[in-house]
Amino acid sequence: MKQFKRIKGTQDILPPESRQWAALENLIHEIMERYNFHEIRTPVFEQTELFARGIGQLTDIVSKEMYSFQDRGKKQITLKPEMTAPVMRAFIENKMYAQQPIHKLYYIASLFRQEKPQAGRLRQFHQFGAETIGSADPAADIEMIDLAVAIYKKTGLKDLQLSINSVGDPLCRNRFRKILQDYIRPNLNLYCEDCKKRFETNPMRILDCKNESCIKLNEQAPKLTDYLCDGCAEHYKQLKSGLDNLGIAYRENPYLVRGLDYYTRTVFEITSGALGAQNAVCGGGRYDLLAEELGGMPTPATGFAAGMERLLLVLQSQQIDMAETTGLDVFIIGMENDARPIIDKTLLKLRNAGYRCDQDLLKRSIKAQMREANRQAARYVLIIGENELNSGKFAVKDMSNGIQTEIKFEDIENFLEQQKLI
RNA sequence: GUGGGUGUAGCUCAGUUGGUCAGAGCGUCUGGUUGUGGCCCAGAAGGUCGUGGGUUCAAGUCCCAUCACUCACCCCA
Image (cartoon, rainbow, N blue to C red; front, side, top):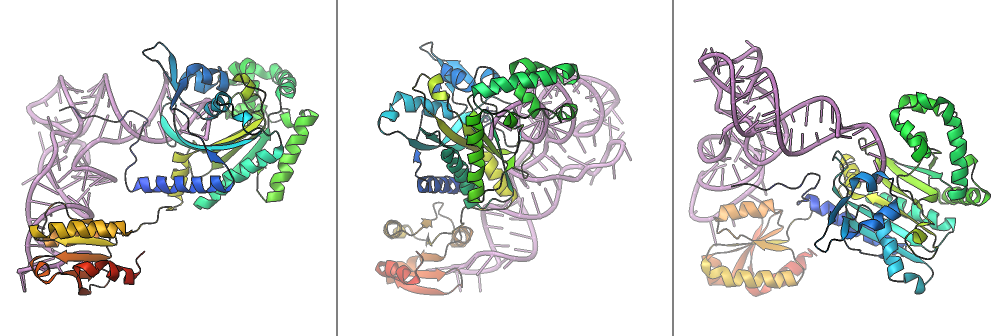
């Protein structure tokens, strides 16, 4: 028989690994609510055009990485490759601006990008993130960075690096673009092939090139932060002093350019040395023009997105276990068929009372069942065989010390109560 | 799309210049006195050595192809 395999770039998250995921998700919910962000959930797919318009036609994501298809109604559909555009779409479509002037939203979502998989990069992957829609104040950017840092800190992660930059607004960016092109043009033929292509389409990216000779050529290159307009410069200055005020360490990286077209002013990135080549664990920034681009009223906004697989990889490399491993409170071993009703009722009663309990479902020998109880790290084992059926008492074994006592069937809950397991 | 690496029991891997090479550890199962775990001991189950060709008297072991996985480039979370 043919066996099925998962699609390339996808993963099965199995126990016990799934416990790490649940712990991380719980932590995200907790911190987000603490910062007064509220969860938003959007569909896994959207009209293709939403992403083409929102993210930018020329970006790698849109031009070559989207999972797009035509549905039976001949509509162009795309599995969402990122969350900011869908969130903004939902904000506009649901007229959320009419409820109140500012919305602080967060999400945990599965995203899809058809790239070649490698360490820390999958085709179906997960991000959590937040968006503050409605505020142009640098305070919103500061809170956003603070929020991301707070979540990482809470996981116990160490050695993360925060990089920040300002990419200005379209006016100062276009002005800078010409200045930059003028600087590069005389030496353009010395740059790598990729950069030659970028020269017209996205010259800012040339500054971000990792090619050694390009890095050399760029050493004296002008920096956008030196050419910001007054408004953008002031915004950037306030961002930095705000981070200083919170004691959040950052590194200014004038060459930090993000891959999505919608960013304005603030951009930032958090990286970890513990990862391989895909070391960006979080990226974000301000996107004041996206709402208009998607057909809404001009609405300033800022946000970030963080990769959960990558975060979990770093946690693993730093040997941080977020999911406390707890064994069972009670494991019930039965040896007689007649014990079935008592086992079932006891389990129901104890589970309702909040104890973690289980039983053997394979009709195994008592020895095998004891081994199972041990494997499950059960604290107490209740044994019920012929003798116990006759006496109306469980043989109760404390697995931590091997001491065994007898407890009446109906007294078992009181007994456990006294042990203060919960 | 481009390049590198790897594919042997459920898992992690040994398998020398082609000729007891089909193995180890872990895991699983069974047993080590009557109805009792962990440690220890004994035993068992489990693999057409990714797949398909080829070379050879003989191929996990060489050659070719193919598939899968993986890492890196590009880019990104």
